[in-house]
Length: 99
Image 1 (cartoon, rainbow, N blue to C red):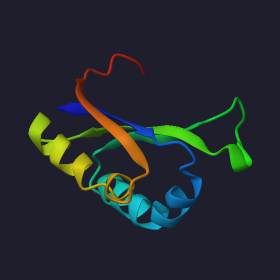
Image 2 (cartoon, helix red, strand yellow):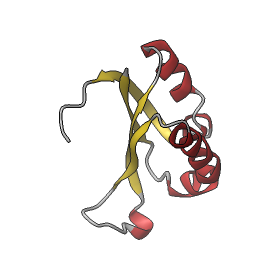
Image 3 (cartoon, one colour):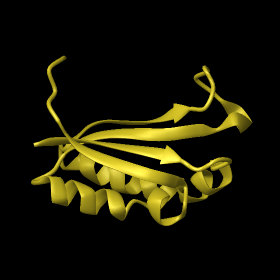
């Protein structure tokens, strides 16, 4: 089943985000290589494709996991979570309707 993982950043997370990004992307690429990743990306903190020093306010991931608990466990081990980028992470079942 699909699950959405929504992380909300702490204030001024950009430097911690940049430091943890390679490990974060490595895990996302593993999901992609397994054919389980639907989408992933950050939420710019301002209305811009490139927010620069404004950074990001969070991230969204939609991926396939065997259960809600498995999705939660995966999210809990995210480098952004472990390094203090995320203030909170919400994991919910997701039903893709479109496309």
